[in-house]
Length: 93
Image (tube, rainbow, N blue to C red):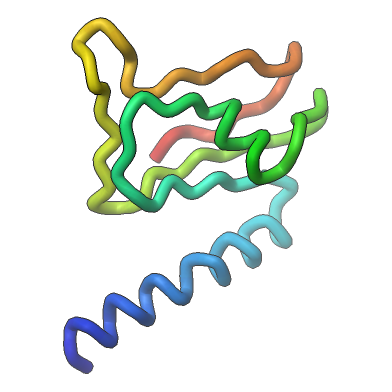
């Protein structure tokens, strides 16, 4: 299989992996799959799932080869944002 087909196949499988993972667990997965800077995890979550509840389990995954950076040395590259009192977070991979 040539490299271009392999990349396409890998990208096509990402949504399938997320759907299977979410069906097998009670986690909501947020995949960060492109380079970005100064991100707010809560804002990304809200744009995909709406406001979280106290019971939500959330996992953020940074895809292999993706760079999350800051535009300034005074700002964090990743901010968690403000969440309900007791969400359960999975690790940032």
